[in-house]
Length: 142
Ligand code: SF4
Ligand code: SF4
Picture 1 (cartoon, rainbow, N blue to C red):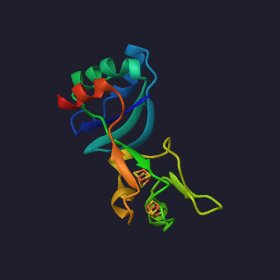
Picture 2: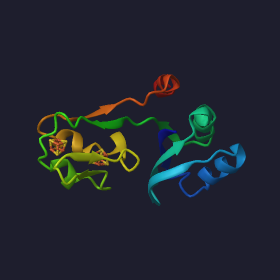
Picture 3: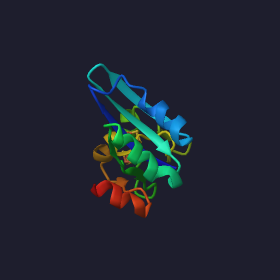
Picture 4: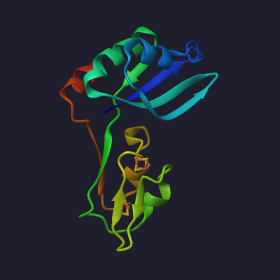
């Protein structure tokens, strides 16, 4: 699965664009987070790798902005168990084990749409990395 960040302007936010694309392309789109109000919307979603290109094109055709957020990696070797990232994480994607080692749940993490933990880490044990899919480079460049 590839994570995509969708932005809908005020003019199109009330249209059922995501459900239209799911029905039209018959592709599962997994919504991870959605912040929507009358002024616009921002949705973080996951789509199957093989459907990425057509899903991105379909959203752009309907006026949405699509970008590919970076993912987060935690280097447990560098971690000094200070807990700063755990306190800041809005979705409890980082927890601490009984032996004080950090446990990172990448399924829950919001990636570079959040990044709150990256700057907070005093030993730079957390970094943003590009999603590993060569097609993404072309999509990001558009
Ligand atoms: S990037 Fe945000 S959501 Fe992901 S682990 Fe860090 S604080 Fe949590
Ligand atoms: S902020 Fe860095 S050092 Fe502190 S618990 Fe998180 S990963 Fe470990």
